[in-house]
Image 1 (tube, rainbow, N blue to C red):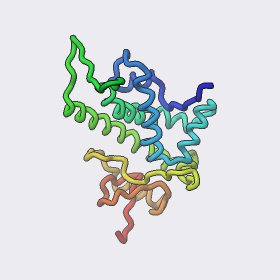
Image 2 (tube, rainbow, N blue to C red):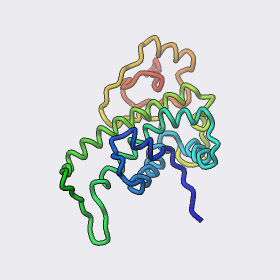
Image 3 (cartoon, rainbow, N blue to C red):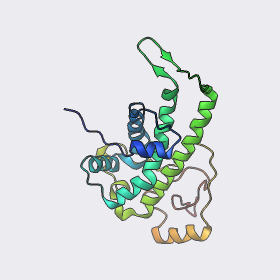
Length: 212
C-alpha cells in the first residue's frame, strides 16, 4: 500500500510561481519540496504546528486560517525553498556509474558560480515570504496557537530568530507603529524574535527593552 505524503504546494503552483519550465518532471521536484518542508518550514514554525498542517492536508481538513497561510505565505516560501534545493540536481544527474551534467544542442549549461548566484536570489525571495509567514502568525495569535504555544514534546520548537541569512534590505516599521504594538502586546510577547543585533528589522517581530 502506497504511503500518502503531504505536499503543501502543488506542481502547478510551483511551476507558475517560479522559473521552473513546464516540461520538468514532477519526479525531479517532489523530493526537494518535501525536504524544504521538513528542513526550512519546520525550523521556523516548529514541529507542533508543522505536524498539525500535515495532518490537515492529508485528511483534507485544512482550517480557513491555515489555508490562508498556505496560499499566501507558506506556499510561495516553499516554492522558492524547493527550487533552491532542487537547482543543483536539475543541473547534475546521478546515474549508476557517474554524475553527469546533461547538455542540449539549443542551450548552454550555466557555470557553478552562476548557479550559486541564482540560488541566492531564490533564497532571498523564500526568506521574505517566510518572514511574512511569521509576522502573520504573531499578529493573529488566536488563530495559530500551535505556533504560539508549541508542545516541547512534539520535537523542534519554532526558530524565533531572523529568517534572513543574507544582507537583504527591507523597509523598517515607523516608530509610532512599533510603539503602538508594544503597548498592545507588551515587550515579552510570545513569538517575537530578537536577532541579536541593534534593531536590524524593527517591526512586529522585534522589540528592544528600554534597559538593553
